[in-house]
Image 1 (cartoon, rainbow, N blue to C red):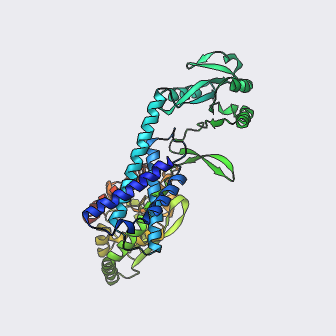
Image 2 (tube, one colour):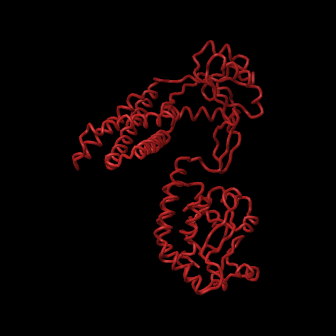
Image 3 (tube, rainbow, N blue to C red):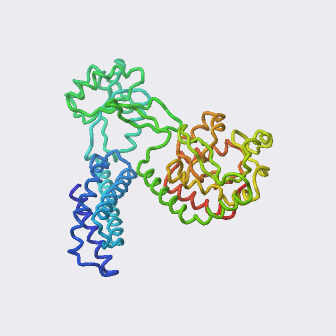
Length: 456
């Protein structure tokens, strides 16, 4: 498979050259040939370390495609870095783009074909792995049914091992109970066993240690089912801490490379925004200074991810003594819950109303995004006194880096008067986060800002 993948990388390289050369003449092919080893090394190493060559019998198609996407990203960083260091400005960017697109398509087609072929072979009884299931309770029987429904994975259960001697020689879920834990050596010698699956009750975990040691001694892979804790939101995965294995529950799925792209996007767009919108900054600053005594910027400590704190920057839209009058206005709060919202807030200046209408007052937060305090998209950062009033379930909105815009901004914004509804929108964003969702929110934010939809 390694050889096939490298051949496909080579094919993508040549196809990209000929397609680009036919559209617009490039330098001779010989002058590009030295780039091919860079592509082969970059893709080969990236595919290997991303886990492409580990068995993907049990991998989902989406996982295999993600490995290709991840490898493309890593290999592109390597390729672009070498080109930058060597100052290779003469290389056609279109050629490089086409090469990576063709390679991604070729690799994806190859993997999908391999997966299809092997799954068809397994459905016919070929390329099987023989499994011994230790456990006979409802969880074990449910696992059997799932294996039976996924014949394309090629797992053949030879039988079961029970913790209850009275079940020996019975048939459970269509499979024979071959013996007890003490009979495992005899069962192993009499059968072909590739893998041992332990699916035993929680209170019986202490009894399986010697059996695991035995399988380790004879060279059989062991898997222990750990689905004892059913989290409503958290995703379970295995991890290692100081060489100690842990069962880890994450409130959101770990998407390292997507988060890396999100951060690069934040840096690029916030920096571009600070430069392009600099005239708006200057005009806003001048209007604030000329029409209201006090500082141009309003700096406030806000809550961030998992209890962190940071200083948030906004254009000042209220009088300099606004905080002193907040207590007097609490009774007029239009938001049910810890957040404070008031449509006709008397503390807002004339210029401030215009800045708020079109969200211009939020523009200084691009500096927060560039620094890394915030992201372009994410739950809005709360006041610290608001966080202290949160219910436990509402605090989960702090499990992601805060943002300038969010689902609340584009789904009613200040028309939403119930903080519970606001929090549920944030949790929906966290639970379904993706780069595509961020992109859609940013697109919806543009008309909301330009037309002042829902602003107060």
